[in-house]
Image 1 (tube, rainbow over the protein chains, first blue to last red):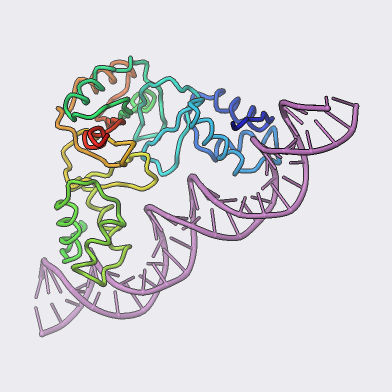
Image 2 (cartoon, rainbow over the protein chains, first blue to last red):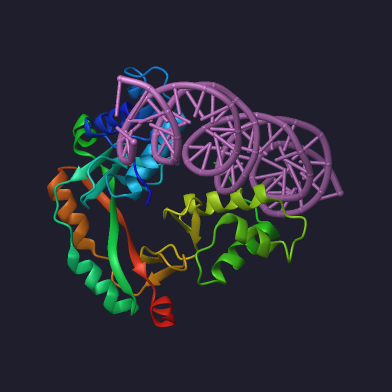
Length: 129
Length: 129
DNA sequence: AAAGATAACGATAATGATTATTGTTTTGAG
DNA sequence: CTCAAAACAATAATCATTATCGTTATCTTT
């Protein structure tokens, strides 16, 4: 069986990701971790983010920004993408299990989960003008 | 004001996209259009798909496949991505306007639309075994 | 505590999708 | 028909991500 070894790089990556409410991409995480581990390689950041998201430790977000974003919280939840500032925000909204059931009925397949991304203007940008 | 000119390339790209129920990426569209216009350039395909999606003629889909997929139908609707065959399917399910309202209330922002992608096993793959 | 096996690393090259550039051709308004 | 602008084909450039490979760190077994 395959084992897993710890490293300070892994810990730092996870700590940085968990320490922000933004939903950063690999490059931002790299820049932050580098303040603590100046010799870390960008490949190491990508490799560990991939593994973390594979084993469900973190989540990978596919929004339409051209780069992948990561979320330290693995529990499924929804996001709002602001078309003004580009920010990605968690929505305090219950996961709608009923949607999966409705989709299952309609497709005849087996729907397991869903990703729901809202688009619009965030509260801060709305208030800004 | 800026004008727009017609071309047989534009027509062919749109015709190919509208002629399939799959949700192809730029490369597949390129390969199909090339049967009719062997000298068309891949850049032309990308350029026109971008413009079409900007002016709302078609839709761009951000699923987690690494490449962008396109949908000849601009009317908002939902999709199912099969984790077995990778296929992307339209769901005959009503667009849930209520979700946008709920999200607006919760964020204090202005939510305009949402993208909802279901993940699971399509009917064909389920029946295959 | 030392040794050995191997996972993880850093550096860097490679890949693959998408975008930009440039000189030429096509379109359509006047 | 003329001419300016839009669109094109060809191709180079960019950018995010993945793969490679020789070295280092971790962890298990003595």
